[in-house]
Image 1: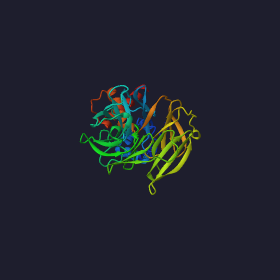
Image 2: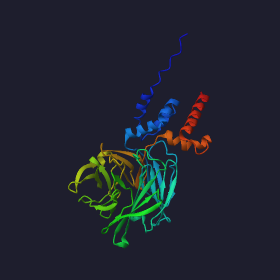
Image 3: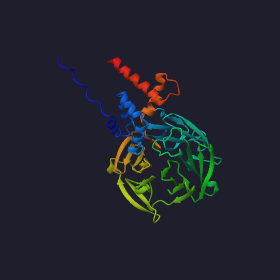
Image 4: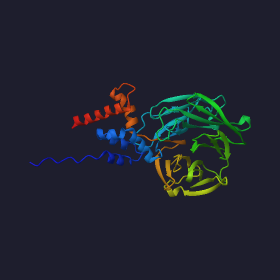
Length: 399
């Protein structure tokens, strides 16, 4: 009788790491499936050193979903097949304002249809944790203000920000009653208080609600009606205004980052996307490139329903665009190609949620704790072992 065939030799730990390091971060379910393969792979993938190397290898956090407002409620729409543990969000009277460093910032309106802001809400899609911040003692309307969320953990590379770590919120608001003055105020989670940071006078402009953009140590916001760029220097704590490019702007615009970390400005002009770069040596705009929207597989849209855009990645490599009839798309600016990520219509002010997501550290903790009856809190590695052992036992019984 012939001996049974030998099992193939197990891959060395180094080879497992080299293979799984290359799993695309916008498909986090691949890491989760690999962690289910065996205990050795689970140990490798749940090791903090692997998670650190995985983030450093890919550098730019992937988009896991986006926030928008539909039917009067703030809605989180995932773009991966593996859902975030606590991302089932559909809350009325919330206006999404910013998403960065793993958390999301909302305005809470006093009532449906109101423009008055009562509190700000910081939300973590992984844990469902909310922190409510009282607004500073100035009148704030969501239609003429914007805000930015920033992780302030010491030494953080912002590739793996601590889930409940310290943060700050930068709020910029225009008060027309004071001769069109825009002020910046900063909230610190460590002091629990707001402080006045800077103000600037101007004419006939107000801050546009929407996502801020961070380039190096400076935040950028767009103002209406002339689409001036409001610049807030985090180090010097100063506000300044930058004129937009001297072109006819009839569509939507977004601040982005272009080569060498320079400030960029993307404008939708009918069927094309014009990208401009700010030349610091001459303080002028220079046209960087032009992308034909229909040439990158976007459906043709009517002038009555043009595409709207927002910056997708902090590295400036992608944009997200949408309109009322065609859905939501991401555009790779390096390849000049669009990918449809949602079929939603009637959405407004889309804000992408960018974050690394290694399921062994988050998914196992949140989703399976109730099923296992594990006491809370349970360490992630311990709970991960329980869940995976239970899955393995179930498979053995079935066989």
